[in-house]
Length: 104
Image (cartoon, rainbow, N blue to C red; front, side, top):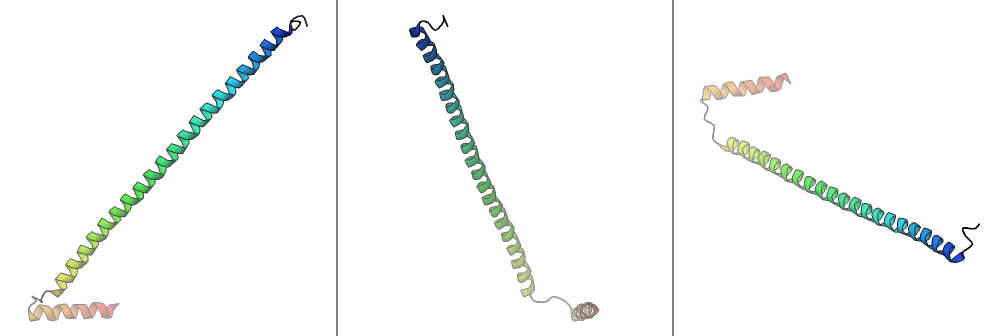
C-alpha cells in the first residue's frame, strides 16, 4: 500500500489508465467505421456492376432479337417472290410436300 500512499500519484495513474482505455476505444471505433464504409462502397459497386451487366445482357438480347427479326423478314421476303420453278419441278416439290406431310 505504500505505492498508493500518495493519493495525487494514484489519481494520475488511474487517469493515465482511463486515458489509454479511452484511446483504444476511440481508435477501435474509428477503424470499425472505416471498415464499414468500405463494405458499403464495395456493396454499391457490386450492385452497379450487376445492373450494368444486366443492362448489357439486355442489349445483347436486343441485338440477337434484331438479327432474328431480320432473318424472319428475309424469309418473308423470299416467300413473296414469284416462283421460278418449271412446271415439272413444281409438281415434284408439291408431290414431295404431300408425301412428307402424309408420312407424319
